[in-house]
Length: 313
Ligand code: PMV
Image (tube, rainbow, N blue to C red; front, side, top):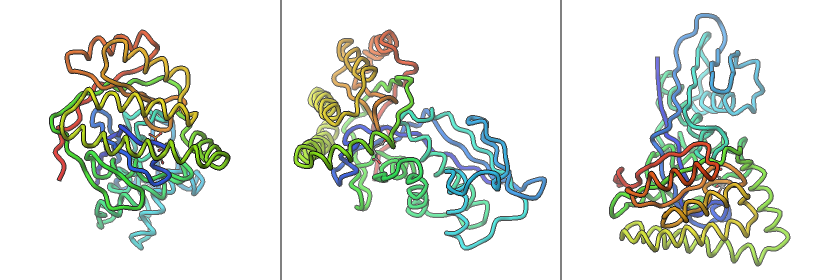
């Protein structure tokens, strides 16, 4: 039997612009996890058990481009082996689906690790991330690769598409509240709409992407030096730019506003947008007030997370 887990993630700065080569910052969220167990099956075939999405069936019953099937086939192709006669794969995740917390990438990473280990050839991180990226293409269309990267390495990541990964350090740990609108984030659609906007107004969009990229670079410096006030202001500005890209929505704007009014140092949507999560930068002692305000403003679920406890190499 072989088991592997992978954390959720949250994007701090740079979503959408990262698809166009600008830098972005993302961190793992270890309070939520995907776990996959692979073991010998009792009957011939590959049995998939994913109660969270109500999936209980043989691999042969789902299309080859289903993300779970794709992850299995990518591992088998990468290892150059065939699947054992009888296999059972159990998938469990506490990461809310379609909320910008990386549930799809986390399931892929855990599955790729558990299956490759079960087959006797555990894959190194670089290959795990590359295979998870192939599966991400099914979820997202044209993903930047940030989700599979931060989730595979489980460290704060400064990410630029196509470049080797860089991690970053926080001068001191800092706290974020993550709040879920309860609206499924249509990431694929939002990414597609930004592409249409970029095709129709390339100059304006490039300018916005440039500024978002500069914000991500500045934010990395402020995180290192512990300038939280300035970091909060960068979050506010990044949110405004994401609104200009049409990826916010009234529910996200309401939560962002509520967090700021309750004393957050800054707030923005996180991930694909039009639903899913927002994040607010807080002083730790402010957590109860901001969390309360977010719930009153309609947040379905909140997570308080500390960034920077994991020191990156
Ligand atoms: O919705 P999420 O958290 O998976 O984030 C998508 C991030 C985008 O920048 C919008 C797309 C991407 O592939 O980077």
